[in-house]
Image (cartoon, rainbow, N blue to C red):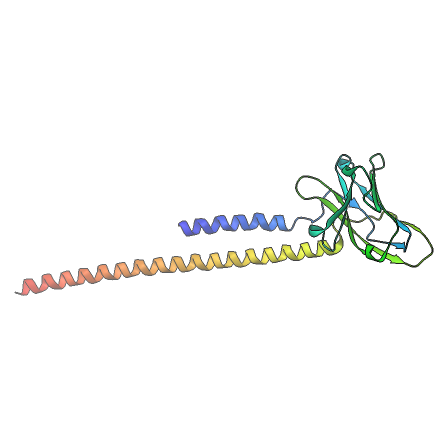
Length: 214
């Protein structure tokens, strides 16, 4: 009975986790940013990131790196001054923070992230910076309607979800097999006890019959 109870608890936990895994990846917290921008060598580029009103007072920053979790902060609104060739300005009335990178050079080509700092998981959106030899010195991006996570990040998250789901499914199957084996072992043990009891009774009866014959 204890094994069956444990199995039922595991099944309920599995259902709860399954429902959590199937929830939409992107909720009401949104941050819009262009997926890619292009600037001219030696010129400048401006990236605008629009956020929800709830994030007006949150710290915003510009981060660099192929993967958000390992990116390096280039500048943030709480620093109060530009960092080298990169500056950030938060227009709380328009609910947009703008990042400007000047004197663009080859080494600036990379993946960047518009980020809003908040308790728990930050809100972020990826921006790929490209460079060209065009004569234009300033490239201003327009805000596109993009989800909080970049599409490739969402893809990896979906893969991770299914890996977790399959792992939990395997655990559920193993728990079910273990329960059946435990039940079979207990039944076998009970049958062996009954067989031994029957054998003992038979031996006693045989012994009594022998005594009576004598």
